[in-house]
Length: 174
Image 1 (tube, helix red, strand yellow):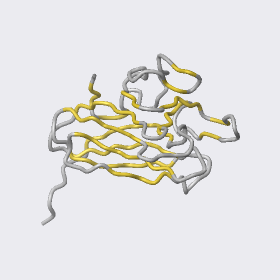
Image 2 (cartoon, helix red, strand yellow):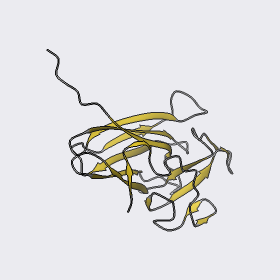
Image 3 (spheres, rainbow, N blue to C red):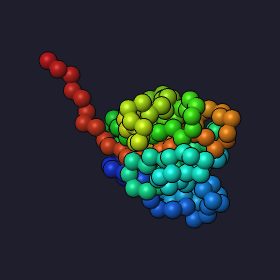
Image 4 (cartoon, rainbow, N blue to C red):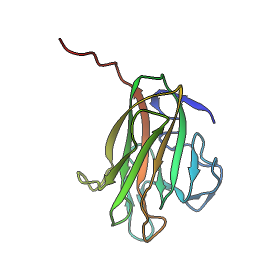
């Protein structure tokens, strides 16, 4: 798989380039979404009202990904070993139940993190998150996954606007 340079949006990080194969909203094929490798029930959703009365708030552009139970989306990124990076993204829940999002980078010197996706601050937009990691090899695999099991396999967090930035090296104070 190709590797994105580590600055700005990841390849198709705003998900505006459509998948090659979709069945309604369900993405068909692990490599169907340009720039991403998918596993499980991953949907390509559009902003606005949805069947069943839900409303999807997509923070950037018109499209986003919804990760169903145990689904994941990953991408390889070129990084500098030893450098610190901030991975930023927008996330919101899509069903009226507890949802979580796991963020992992491998290999790295940082443990994966699970965040509770509650969208507390506003009902009409996604919350923006930042997660830091230290790279341990020239290519890192960034993975977003839904670690939970929902009653409805399609329920899960919606992600959008995935970007990365190398952080300046912190120096000790005197």
